[in-house]
Length: 297
Image 1 (cartoon, rainbow, N blue to C red):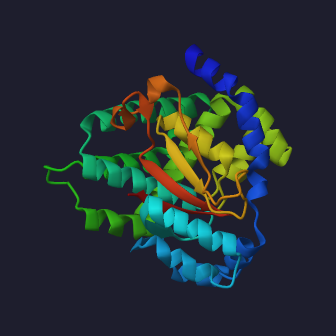
Image 2 (cartoon, one colour):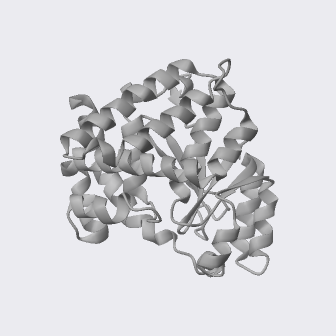
Image 3 (cartoon, rainbow, N blue to C red):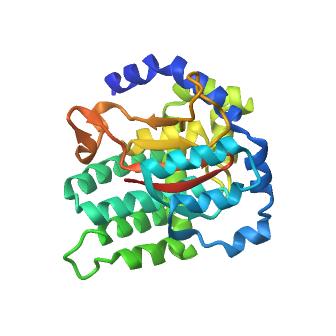
């Protein structure tokens, strides 16, 4: 634990800059496109869409900034597909949920399942030590573990890819799993309040506990750098976030920026370690206020 904190504290200055820079991704074209989808329209969009070609993004910005269309072409060179999520404030957790479970379904990595189950148990104990009654979170934890075990094949309870998609679209499963991730995230932030407090103060000017009660645990609250860092650290799962914005690079060319949220090396899943480099197997596309799932080529 001491090594983990040391690693994180070494990167605290960089993290702080990134937290404050989060708002710089606000982009008029993208915000107009986002606000065009009101709450009623959002309800018509499934929690999780089908895979679509990256080129489908271009249709949304035909009358927008030319640099966005150029960046979508760059994305198209690097990524095979996009899977959209509903823009209801839960899109980060919902995207993470499906990406992670799909990865386990396709890889059948039993060692990774055992590794994350150990971290889930640490989160459960952290919530208990913070004074949460078991009945406030236990159902959410049990349902996620049920989905996790279900994607491992060869058992009577095993589920197919089609069934996984169906479950992630079903509120009685999907919303419970989102709540599981929200409690895991909240526990991590509160457990390491000294580390997270400067970032939270910079964002909201509230206490760590107030931030968790108002901006992490409630359904529909959007996620930013703090929540992503906390979930990645708590579960030990690297996450890549790719940014679609109008910023230009120093060389004058068009490039698409990304940031890898990396937990301490000791917690990294073996499945993501290759030639000494830890490559996230979860990739999300970030547009201001919204996350979708990307599939690398």
